[in-house]
Length: 88
Image 1: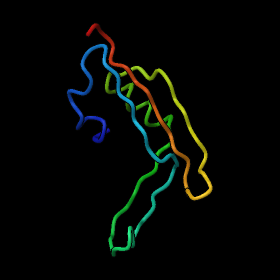
Image 2: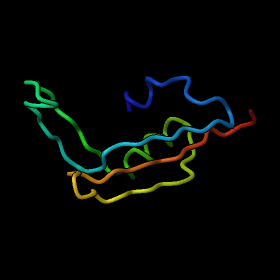
Image 3: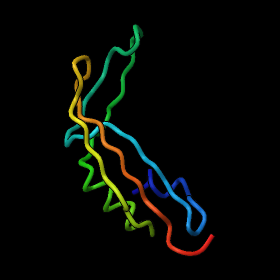
Image 4: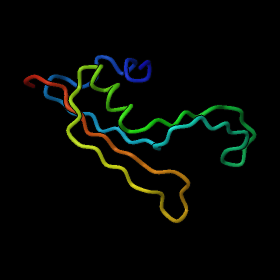
C-alpha cells in the first residue's frame, strides 16, 4: 500500500492512471542485473491484489489485462486502468 500511497495526490478527479507491471505471487532475489553485480528483492503481486490497493486508494479499476510471457520473457505482464471518481 505504500507504493500506491506515495503517488499522492494521484490523478485529479476524473483523471486516469495506467499502471503496468510484472505479475506473479512471489519474491525474487537478484544478484546480477544488466551485467552488474546487485543485491535486491523484487516482489511480484497478482493483478487482483494491485487492483485492491488501487481501490483502497480511492480509484476505480476500469480495465485489467494480463499477457502471458513472450518468447524472450520470464513473467506475465499486467496492465490496470483506474479512474479517480469525480469531475475534472
